[in-house]
Length: 80
Image 1 (cartoon, rainbow, N blue to C red):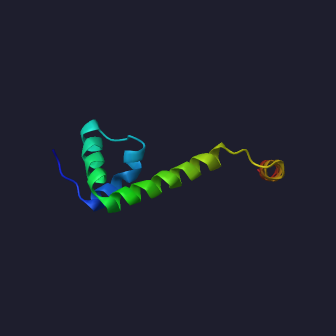
Image 2 (image 1 turned 180 degrees about the vertical axis):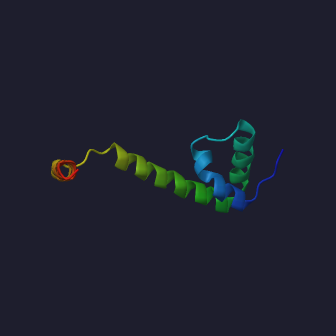
Image 3 (image 1 turned 135 degrees about the vertical axis):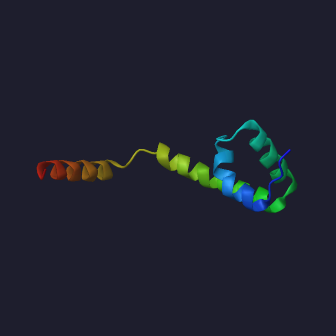
């Protein structure tokens, strides 16, 4: 089984979180995180960060913001 170090884990944590790796890579990183407090903490921070991004993407814009965006789009189309 391939060994990874902390830099490998931190560099690939995004792909790991989204399971965008082959199964053997996921297993190696999972094992490393399970045995490394520093990488586990980094992973936990990334999880929270991704949750915040997801919640932000799920929220609808305010009506005022939507109106401003639509107004600017119309203005841009009129100038073309």
